[in-house]
Image (cartoon, rainbow, N blue to C red; front, top):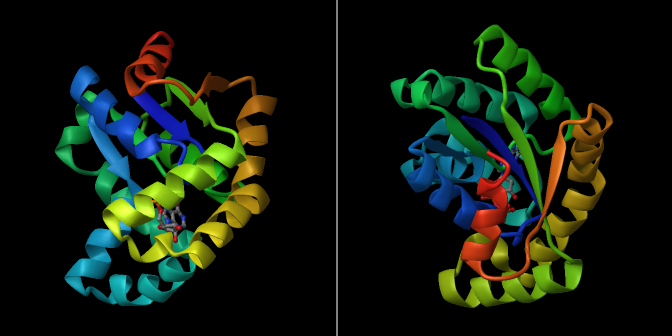
Length: 185
Ligand code: ADP
């Protein structure tokens, strides 16, 4: 099973992706996690990405695509994957279609976790306290939501136009939401 999970910052993508990984025995590929690992390791890519991420902006398409391609080449991908945090703009959606076609890994499911903006703000404020992530400052959170509306919302339209988008209500208990996604698999 190959799944793309879409949703705003704070929509619960990371939480659901981790549960889906365990349930379906597939790889969880989070471009945000891959980038944070590169930052922590101090690789040239990480050094380049760090300031961009701290402001809540998108890292360049080229860098993220290269990282993703490398990750998709690892053996665990054979059992399937859940992609979390990619694609984040229309160019990435097109690049992903091209890459997966070339790798002969067609997607089975594209899911959007739909959460009203007021809930997103409350959740992100809570997470800022709990996790202290560098990009959970009030300014960076506001910018990430703005970037999502401007750049990632068109990705939803891209899949919807092609009749590929499944919307799931992202409010309720974690288990309820997981059940809604699993019902689509
Ligand atoms: P969230 O969904 O809460 O914003 P992520 O972990 O998915 O958290 O992403 C954190 C940051 O990593 C983003 O704000 C962005 O700077 C960078 N990032 C992650 N995925 C991508 C991507 N596909 N393209 C560009 N930048 C990305």
